[in-house]
Length: 531
Image 1 (cartoon, rainbow, N blue to C red):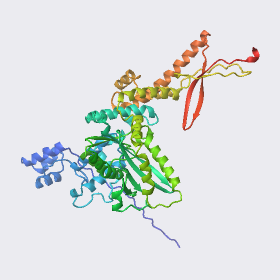
Image 2 (cartoon, rainbow, N blue to C red):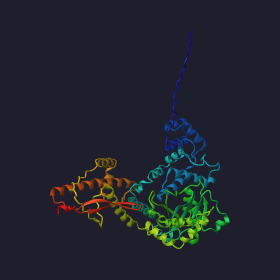
Image 3 (cartoon, rainbow, N blue to C red):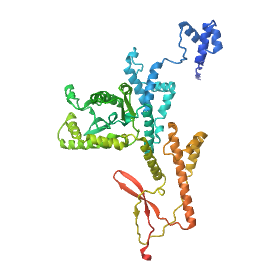
Image 4 (cartoon, rainbow, N blue to C red):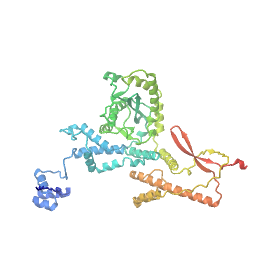
């Protein structure tokens, strides 16, 4: 018996793409006016390249808005998106980092704050914008997308921290000049800062948001209780010297900042009769500004300025001095009440705040002075930044070139020491000239000439977006020229035979929490047995 099997093969064909007819707003305007003047829909469609159905729909409904739109309807209309984009631009101008997450939080908070404009409810189904909405929003606002890509570039390389400080001061000075705040930044009562500190007790962490001004006034803190602690009653809260809230996982850093602004900062300004506007320095990377915080600052003449992101505690006045004293007092208080059980923070925190009342003013003033935020003097910071840059580049690239002002003479007498071996001639790393050529090939002739003319400048005074390129090329050229110059000097001295300068050797000094390389002089070695 024979069996026959039939196999049916089906080939799936790709659906044909429907080519949509592309046209501009000018074409639509001309076609619309031609139909109104008596031209048929068919003739106007063929003449100006506009779909016939589009013309019929607009003429029939008498639509005067001739903006070319394609795809589904946007969640936010044009005016709402412009208001959102303007607020984000204002944050970027103040130095705050605008990321994709900040953009989504901004949009969600904008919808919640303006629910009267959305009678059908929130346009975002999940309560938070999606990545697709974010990408299309940035396509509609390319200038904002460009600002997001330049968040870190205008401060220079993250790895070269000393160079970024004068650049940051220059950016903030230009921003304050643009906002006409030159006199405000010189007034102690109108310059504020806010930062947070985390106090630990066993597994519980209490977050405290402290604020202060350059005059030395310490504002009441906002205490964020851990989930295991109960908040005091309303009557008890009215008797406390600070505001309290729970560490809710749904609250972001922007919500914490808004609570501090509305519940602590604004009432204190009214009570103390502080003149407006005021400047508020924040760690913009840690305390991200949301839409509510941004609008609150705009309404009450509070000008937020972001501190240098991803930097150490040098530019944070409260971290420099005050928080060390708070942590010390907190540890002492925990030792005094080690055996006691607490379900709230008042019994632990109030004694700490009472002990700080006497020395807080001088401590805060010292912190502002150490952080260089008050008095404000960008020229001094630029000069210091130039000195730090030269020292940093010298220590990073070579150890034999720099000479400190007060070199330590180390007298080493070694018995039966061998004759000193001739020093090897330094050569340029072959990858450095290659990197220089690759970098300069991407620059225009005008940019290259401007970089070369300002090569020895400490701070780039040109466009902000070219700061990082200028610093990278300057470091490459300095490193290449430094090695070449040293090798030429060594070869000339060897040919003369009269080179007998004391050698420079690197001596490592280890201190607590620091590591540095200091250059010291070594005198010629002596063999006492030959004497």
